[in-house]
Length: 371
Image 1 (cartoon, rainbow, N blue to C red):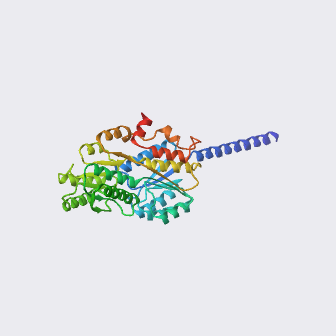
Image 2: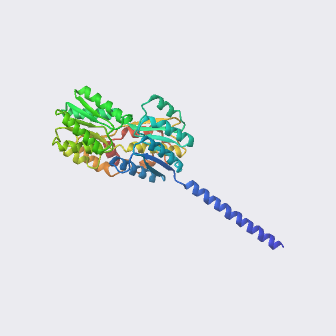
Image 3: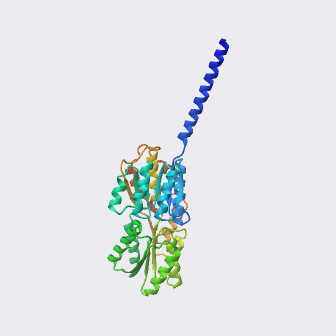
């Protein structure tokens, strides 16, 4: 009888031990589950979007996290549904390059309801009421963007340095803060340098409509010697160059644009572009760093934060060669640098540190850090 009792106790203890071990193993697996950051992006095939995605995947891999990519075509309805779907898929945080200010309240509301951190990349909020609404949310942690007025201004000054006197602007969406702020910068540079703005065309997001707009401007204004392309991920620039080539005016009509493509060196050498801004996929990288620290339980701030940075400017073949060598196929920050931007691996890291890193970003900065 005693033997049976002892055997029963042993079996019971063994069962408890196995059960406890299984629970511990399950708990460990739960703890090891990587953070999933959802990214809504306008496309996944253009030069800029491909760089953004590859750099975010690299960064996530360094930190043991994952990214879920959703393409929105830069359309408001798609952007709202993308954020909703990314949250439904279990993303721990979401980030988006919003196409207008008007879409922000809708995606902030979704984040609030799901209690999921949200951040914007490549964008600031111009509308004061929408900005105040977003910043009242405990889940809207902020945004990272370039000084887009400075982008337009610097590229406008580059046209003046080429001796340009008569310009047009081909830009993407009205209501898009980046497009509108670059426009403000261009107009400021033109006013200061005496360049006459002959015309402007908005809502240009692809090569074909850009080519048509440029053709119309060239036909309408024989004196035209400058075309400022607001952006659009490479397509609008390609269409504009094609139209200028068709009229044999490469080198006579100078073009500026944003968002480097893989052929930036040749474009400068062949005088297809006079100057460009780009290399700014660090913007969504810094957005990712903000979100990672937040979901990891180490938010860098208790309130909404905005980080402003500068892109890289290229005006010569020599600069483009350096950019190609140091930045084209290499991440702007290595594994050690990435880990040091998280409180998990660097307990003393602060928002102030991140701001300094973002402000320092330039071609010279990358070369100095990685030489």
